[in-house]
Length: 110
Ligand code: FES
Image 1 (cartoon, rainbow, N blue to C red):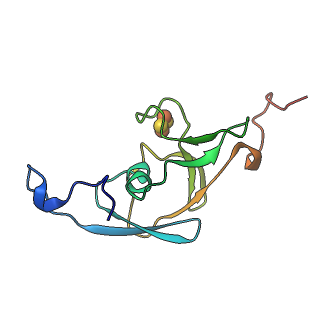
Image 2: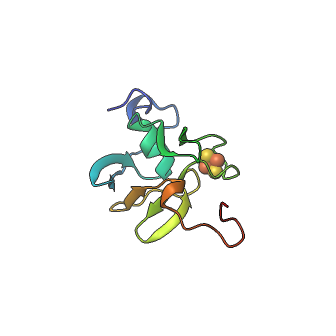
Image 3: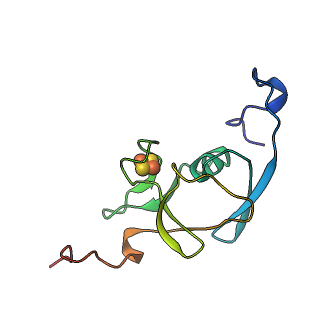
């Protein structure tokens, strides 16, 4: 268990944890119901899971769905903001980088 996750027994609001398991690039990662995918990744000590155009590591920057630094693929759906998507038991998450993406129309590099 990660030190980043407050244990249910010491949580002041007395929450009841329901465990869930997602896979990230084929590896099982455990979380609790209610966490975002980014929350599950951070609790697993994964601070970055993609690379920007410059090659710099990217993970959570804003945490509120504005910066798009936390993009992942969930199932077949690309460009999911991990900070905005609740993790569901059985989610298959794949990390992605700009190099993987098709350029948006009109943004092709010349
Ligand atoms: S961290 Fe900024 S959109 Fe997810």
